[in-house]
Length: 199
Image (cartoon, rainbow, N blue to C red; front, side, top):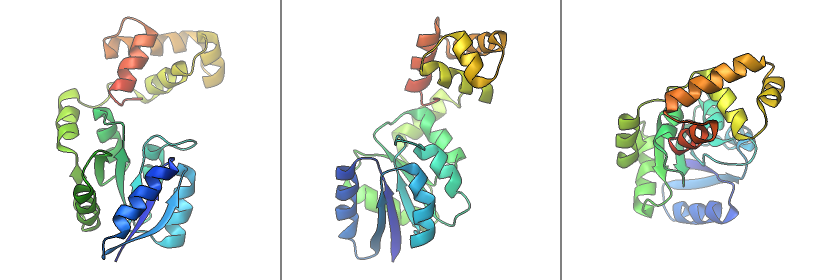
């Protein structure tokens, strides 16, 4: 029996996935949660084999959650509405074994759960191709951090204070991020980075 935990912030999606997977004789949905930070505790409690994990959830997102599950003996399938190529490489780096979008067929989802449980990797073919074409994020860890903070708004002085950096350092990181994304402005760099799944 494959024990599955479903983590998605939308109750309707969780319920639909549980009903769909519950039909299968070899799959048992052992828990459903709506927040990323609740997943590790539920994995320990239920000894789940496979976690279906949404990327965008309140609190801790799915990518950060996947990284926490790396050494917990379960396999992770990222199941998301947001089919952004940059998310694929970030999810795999975080330890995910699968990456599929929510518009796959029920049969494909069941097949994905079984394959990942058996130790295989499953990635949506179109996203895999886009990820290879786009390549990994060119942003350094600090540029990523500064651009993510800039996405929340605020002046350079606000960002410097919040990130405990000098204003000059913040400007340098923003300038580098703008250059690496091929953007002309901070707002455009943020949009490009979000669209490609780098933020």
